[in-house]
Amino acid sequence: MADSAEAPAAVRHAEETMGTVFSFDVRGGEPAAVRAALDEAVAGLHRVDEVFSTYREDSQISRLQRGELTVAECDPEVAEVLELAAEAERRSDGWFSTSYRGRLDPTGIVKGWAVERAARRLADVPGVCGVNLNGGGDVQLLGTPGGQRPWRVGVADPLRPGGLAAVVSAAGVSELSVATSGTAERGDHIVDPRTGRSAVTDLVSVTVVGPRLTFVDCWATAAFAMGSREGLAWLESLPDVEALLITAGDEVRCTGGLAARLG
Image 1 (cartoon, rainbow, N blue to C red):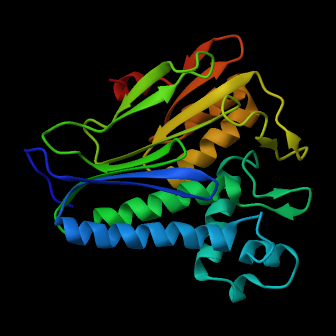
Image 2: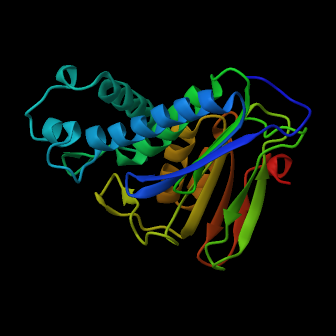
């Protein structure tokens, strides 16, 4: 990925799929090449929806759940995602899981994985110096927007609609991701893997910052289900991860190194 002292040209695009909107911001590179790569990235996201959607009866994940396919008979990406999900489950001691009440549901990892994969492919285009890909509020940042400015991401305040709880800066790093799990946008949708029911927690949001969105998204989900005390302690134990937790009582709790990522 190239670097530039001057602000490079930007190619932007928004695409609706997987039940949300994906916003692309690609800096640098030859516009025609970037557009071609962007078309491939968009097609890839739609393909992910076709393969992994639990709402489609004909998706490979739905057919896998019903026993009509084996993992070996699915696209290779299915095995890849399930392996990553198993790793996330191990590292979170089961607080992140793709199995609830005997049903397979990789939704909690698929979007972050798809965003990260698409962003990295765009970053490989010759001349590109920066990629910002936002999938429904979860963001993968690579490189810089140019002009010696870092990427910055606002974190919504769940208790004050329209307000920001923080602004995360990617200054000094070549890759950063930001993921938030909470109840402000979608209500009680996060499942406690131990019960298979909505998580009972004192939190309204958890924002996690780290290099790879695939795992950062999982960590936000797991920490939310844990609750503020256990979630914060666990997040503090993870390497290269910082976090901002907000409770229903408007208490803000942060990992020790988060301040260095704000700005």
